[in-house]
Length: 320
Image 1 (tube, rainbow, N blue to C red):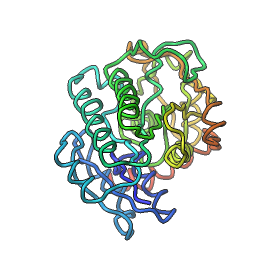
Image 2 (image 1 turned 45 degrees about the horizontal axis):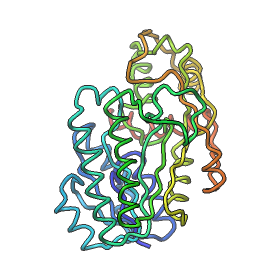
Image 3 (image 1 turned 45 degrees about the vertical axis):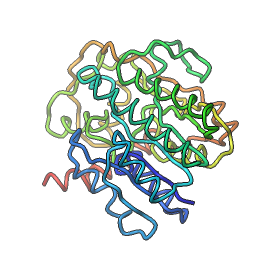
Image 4 (image 1 turned 60 degrees about the vertical axis):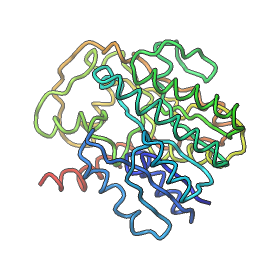
């Protein structure tokens, strides 16, 4: 089986590629190594994969339809995991047009090619941000037409186009909505690193509402990958699935746990909750459990311990 993984050198994409390689699959990684954060981090993510005979790296931008057509023509992937995109709701407020170009038009390029090249399965990585401020817990049948950020709006648009191309080409497509993914290789703009970096340097961390009344459904990356692989391999023609842990944790408790694991105290700078963020994220994963066999297994303390080990070995040593 040959898989095309977009964003394959990033946080989630590189973990997915490693898992597929461990199953003796062929992996075509597409990544443009943009400067949203230090590209060296991405190169480090795929250092081991590059040594695997089944791995091919294509440095390219999926906004470039001609370049992507060459990828499909050359490698003829059986299945596509479209993980790549511009992330971060707050950052999207500053550059909404870029988010539209990458997350909407880039996604359309891939859907068009997947349909024309008779791909057997297409998985589109969406986000819990599409739920906005809907009452929790969030199930897949809740309305998602009130996004709080350009990021959420573009990911919702991608979901709609995913269905359109399924309808037009009969493209087997599964949409997976990720809930607050964390773990080793996490991006520098993600919460664990945003907190740990200043904690180590005795600088304040920004905590919405002082961490009180703000909850996130932290989902460890290995659990997310298990859900993505199940979505890639199932034979469901089209559906949408929440991939979350279903156990929201208050942000202040998250910080306390980080303090215990790292041995460093946090200095709190309380700020109002951003208009681009809901107060609570909470996944109802009954559908994914029933149809994909999805069962998140990693407790937050265990997952953050793995993150801290990686951070010490990879991030701190690089800084030294």
